[in-house]
Image 1 (cartoon, rainbow, N blue to C red):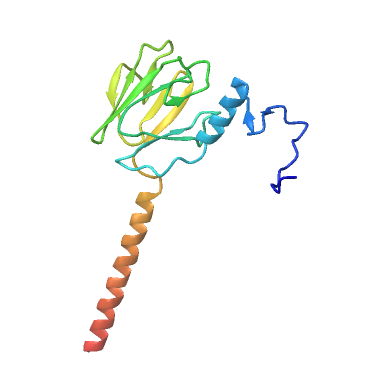
Image 2: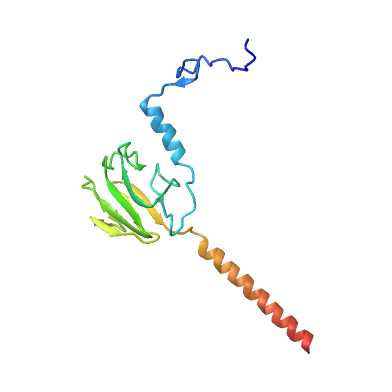
Length: 174
């Protein structure tokens, strides 16, 4: 032995090859691994970095952060956002993010691009717009769902503190 702790190769693991641990994967396995990686929460929605949140079966809860510039959406693996749904075209749509303005454009897809149930060629997106590409559905978010509730809770707490301070001051002065 050379002093290195090596774990024995798992005979069920048919993907390993070579002493450096080089691995070979079938295309379907790569798709599975990348979709699992993309399915994690990508970040919180903000005006500067909005997200598309999947709401249709197979996409529910998946988030895709929209960075500055143009991002492509489609079924093809060369897209920034890959949607593995047969109703989505290989290159279905673009979303352009320029200085806080977010524009979605259909790229001659077969089943169309819809925003708030209206077929579009190009339109500007607003918070909570409902986007449908074929049967794949998303919500465009520029803030989190519960931000207003949290802000209202803070306002109520601050108001209560001010009221308590005023009552205490009045009681002390009397």
